[in-house]
Each structure stands twice: as C-alpha cells, then as structure tokens.
Length: 252
Image 1 (cartoon, rainbow, N blue to C red):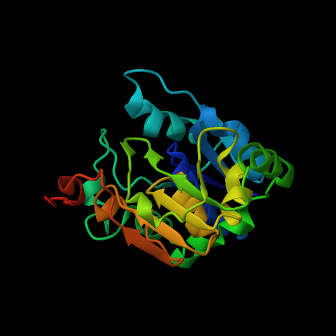
Image 2: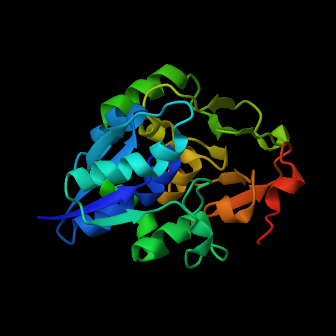
C-alpha cells in the first residue's frame, strides 16, 4: 500500500482541521502515518483509528526538532516518501515565507492548498471520526443540570476571551468547556446548547467543521491569517480582551 505522511505535530485544533486531508488520501488508497504530540495519541487513536498515529515527545529547548526534524525522521524510518508539511508558519530553520500562497491565505486554506485537497473537504470531519456516545453522555450528565444552558469556550492556548454577558438569556446556565475528557466528548453538550459562544480554538474549529449548533457567536482573538475560515452561520461579536494590534499582520 502507498504511504503518506503528515507533518503537523500540534496544535490539537490544527490536527482536526487537517484530518480530512488525511482522509482524502486514505480514500485514494494511501496508508496514513502522522507523528503528533504524545499527549494526544490516546484520544486521536480513539476517534480516528484509521490513522497510524506516531507519538512525539516535546522537550525544553528542542521545539525545532519536535515540530519538523523528529517527525520527518520518523516518517523516513518507515519509508514514507510522500510527505506533506502543513505548517503555514514555523519559526524554526524552515523558511515557509517562500511557500506559495503563504502571504495571501488563511492558515487553514494554506493546508489544503499545500496538500492539493479541495478546501470543501475541511467540512467532512464527520466522515473522519467515530463518535463515542457513551463518553459524550458521561460528560453531559456531569455538567448539564438545567436543560436551558449556553456553552462557552473562551480559553485558548494564549488568550482568554470575554464578551458582553447581556446576550445570555435570563435563567440559562453557562457551561464553560474545559479539559475534562477528550475534546470530542463535549459534542452532545454542544449539540443541545441553546447558544454557543467561542473564541478561536479547537472547539470552535470542531463545531464549525461538524456544522453543529444553531445560534453561534465567534470572538476573534488574532489576525485574519491565523483565524480559521468559518462556514456555518456564526455571528462575530466583540472580544473585550482582544488587543487591536493582534489583528494587524505586517507582510514583509
């Protein structure tokens, strides 16, 4: 069988954005090999066992190796000769500024252009994963105490968003998604929420890719090149904690 390798060791949101790329090539007869941060091996294997996930450890002062050199080495060791490196930005020894499209498209579209996969595949994530309804129910039973509730996800890796709370209806609970369980364990809570309010994060990406929710609000946290293209009826509202300088990107 033909082998295809993906280099995108993290973040977890980027991995979900790129998962349909791997699925596109799986359907073309490729066996998929994908080195990722070892912290996420269990959950990604649980939901997408058709990928050969390869654990990569991260060590202080070894970030260059973690993001590119070690994954590339792992893929070459198992004789993968078709490899796509999907980073649109990497502050390491690799100069991605010379990549086609780098200065002109968002980071998620870049991944699909780079891998030669139609961008509409991004919204085929439902075909790539196997949901675990028992795990979803466990999280639902733990956090839902009132049938009237709003779901928020305001904490991203480097940012905590905030918004005008007056948009939340009176009498509704607010459930903030946290690190309990796997990221996809929260899908039942999200599906049944009266309102979804999220900043740019893995959860917003997944909600958009799976076309979940009816009333959704998005809080931008950084410049448009690192903000995903959203395609499922989000209303953008003011992020009270966003620095206007963060949305400006100077192109050299």
